[in-house]
Image (cartoon, rainbow, N blue to C red; front, side, top):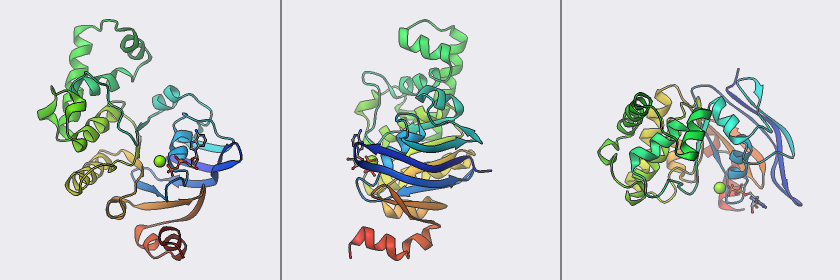
Length: 251
Ligand SMILES: Nc1ncnc2c1ncn2[C@@H]1O[C@H](COP(=O)(O)OP(=O)(O)O)[C@@H](O)[C@H]1O
Ligand SMILES: [Mg+2]
């Protein structure tokens, strides 16, 4: 059984079909990429999967259960975490604190406590801190734990965002353009980190423009154009698909 199954998913904004009857599966333990020109519907697709938007039609099943129409926090609690096209870190918080917030968001009680600044027991706090440090180390940014997160280099901010998403202990991680704004070295680092995350048994679905990164790390690729799926397959097949080449290069 696929971890995620998207079936005839549809999202209309007025007369615009931003996502038009898109279907695909994501196999457990894989890295799958969604590519397509600007405006193809990639971010909208992510917003539908994570509950940030309600679909006009179609289904999203996670581990065989229909999650379409559930609220974002319910979907997160099911085991789906995400990062954003524009990095969204908390200001005036260190890298470590940003990740600890992600951890607190795991439980409803933690969420309320985080929202209303309620005290945690010291033992809980300690465990959360240890786990957050572990994640920073995994993503090679432990040295920056006590640095204000938004003052870090772009690549490091991405890694903090990854760590915060992983603090939710997701089974599926959605990454929206993880290499956006990164230089060539940072992009290579991020690719390595994504592969490392998959190595933990976490399934990854990513939207990305950087084709060398996509071709490098993905097991399978879905191609969207004007809201429709125009191709799906392994990187080598996608690279040689005439319809995909036409969409990217023009006639
Ligand atoms: N909230 C919205 N309201 C109206 N139109 C939207 C909204 N979000 C996205 N769109 C439109 O839907 C299409 C797909 O957008 P998006 O999913 O952001 O594409 P991508 O991420 O592939 O660049 C675009 O034409 C965009 O202008
Ligand atoms: Mg987008």
